[in-house]
Length: 183
Ligand code: PRP
Image 1 (cartoon, rainbow, N blue to C red):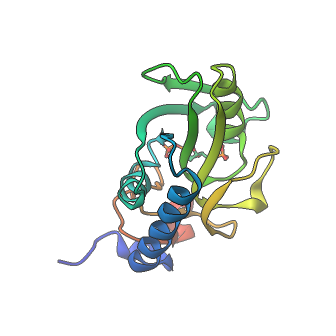
Image 2 (cartoon, rainbow, N blue to C red):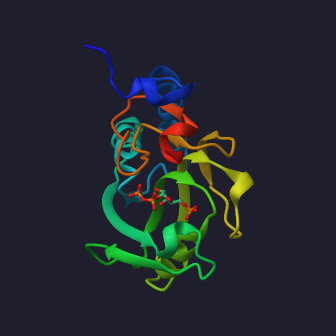
């Protein structure tokens, strides 16, 4: 059956196979770095869910998982950088190695806030893995420790990333046609 989301995609940026290869490499890299430790992978919902599911199966060390959900005031364009936590950690993280899992690092406002918030809970370390990094849009001083791909400043969807809550289930990452979000 034809994928009905396909016609809204201007161009495929990363195919399913390219993503899978990259995610497997990231999983192996992180497993090497954290060998002998039991880090806590902390997914930031909702966008992380597809990446996190694949990344976790590419990680070969013992680990824990948890999820948080946050929402930015003013659609992430707010100059206050205020972020609201809509789902908090489910347990204490003191003394643990935290790896925050994101689908995309854009302005950095979300992760900058989250990193500060998590620091107050006294983990032993906090690192960031993001599938996509969009450095052209950065407003906060934050960088990923591990990332899958750098992306241009375009509207990207698929593999967990949405436009108006849609396209998250697209199995690849593509650039959305401008007429879809400007109409
Ligand atoms: C996206 C993404 C990050 C954030 C990055 O989430 O998952 O959490 O935006 O943007 P920033 O670097 O500019 O802060 P979004 O708010 O779209 O929610 P979602 O994960 O539910 O799609």
